Length: 136
Image (cartoon, rainbow, N blue to C red; front, side, top):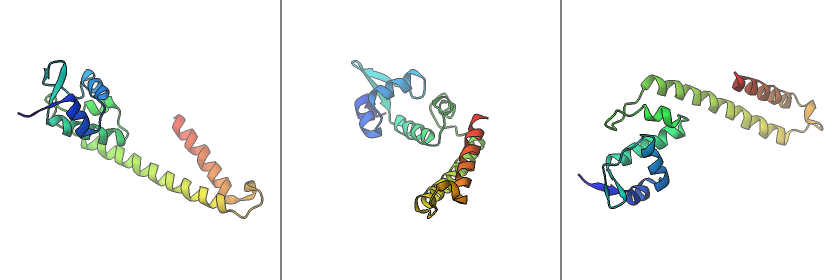
């Protein structure tokens, strides 16, 4: 079994050594030994770190991500939760697209006063609804 020194794992994964130590501390990854004072990891850690990065990008917490690994470190992905998160991302994309389009319109709007622009008023209503939705 090939072992990776923490520095090599950091270089290959792009994850800082301090983050690797933290991930080990909270149980996301596991070192398999030490060479002197330096932690050693098996090559499976590269896959685990890629999945952790993907989970973070998708908005999952580290605690959620921790639950996506079996005790031996193999991925155990919860398909239902992934679908729910994908749906939430889809809604966020729609909202951001609407916001982008509205901001472009407002920037180019010929109205002398933005408060006279119906599209700007809809943008303000959208912002108010979005803020209210986040509170609940």
